[in-house]
Every structure is written in C-alpha cells, then in structure tokens.
Amino acid sequence: MKTSIALIGFMGTGKTAVGKILAQKLDKNFIELDGMIEKKAGKSIPEIFQQYGEIAFRELEIEVTREVADREKVVIACGGGLVLNKINIDRLRKECIIVYLAASPGVILKRISGDTDERPLLAVSDRARQIKELLRFRQPFYERAADIKINTSRLSIDTVVEKIIGRLKDDAGYD
Ligand code: S3P
Image 1 (cartoon, rainbow, N blue to C red):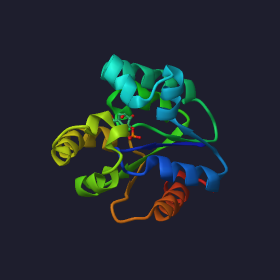
Image 2: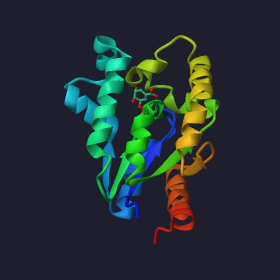
Image 3: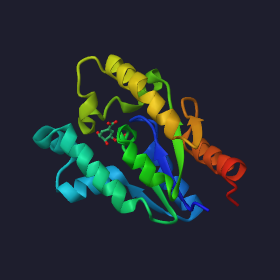
C-alpha cells in the first residue's frame, strides 16, 4: 500500500497550498521539491535558471526527486515541469499516489499574476500565450502520470483538499 502522495500540475494550480493542508489533515510530512532544490543550490529558482540554465535546474530536480521518492507518509509538491522527465514519475510512482491538479489557462494566468518574478518560465511579455503553449505541450505528460485528476479551476484550496481525500478513499482504498 502506498503511503505518500505526489502533487503534480502546472504552475499556479495550488500544489504547495493544497499540499501543506493535505499533509496536515492526513498526518504526513510536507515536502516542497522547489524548496529542496533552492537549498541544495544555495540559490533561488530564478537565480538557478539565470546563472546555470533550465537543463541544470532539471538535473537538480531529478536529484532531489530521487532523494525523496522512497519516503513513506509524505505529501510532495512537485514543480510544474517535473513530469517532463519520465524518470521522476517512475521513481515517485513506487511510493506515491500521483494527484494531478488541473486548471484552465485563464485561471492559471489570474493565479500567477503578481508572482512571475519567482517563475522564470513565465517572465515573458505575452504570459497568456506562454501558458497556453506550455500547457498544450505538457497536458499529455500530466494526464499520463496521474492516478487521480482534480480540476481546480472553480474550487477553493480547502475544497480541493477535501476532494483529494475523498478520491483517495474511493479510488485508492485509503481509510
Ligand atoms: C516550473 C515550475 C516551478 C519551478 C520552476 C519550473 C515549470 O514550480 O519548478 O520555475 O517548469 O513549470 P511551480 O509549479 O511550483 O511554480
């Protein structure tokens, strides 16, 4: 029986906010992979992208994913691009039920407005278009990886948490 949960999905779908509450409610530890990467590098995510580039960031992401993948009783908030490297999902799947938090491009745009400084991939002039293009490319990766999918577009953080707990019971046999 898997005892951990990995939250995947695009930037701005609430993985961190949902993950913290979900972990509390299920009495599990919360892990944020972006935070682990920042600690390891001693730099912020934008600094890593700027100074070393996206490929180096993805390598760090693979490294921290490997480090946490076999932990029991944790909720892991994954970065939005983690699914692009299949090895990450293969590793997480051993101990984690993978929950995909989906949202429409319009909702994502609203949710991330204000904190694009923290998200180098969205630091472009036409953010709406960038979100649509990245999402179109990534959607199949999220769908393929997901054990459970929740559309969060019209839901509050608390409702998303409740839905996940419900689905875990129904689909994954959690008690
Ligand atoms: C990324 C998402 C970010 C962070 C990095 C790259 C992506 O995490 O890992 O900026 O490729 O979608 P969040 O999804 O937590 O914003």
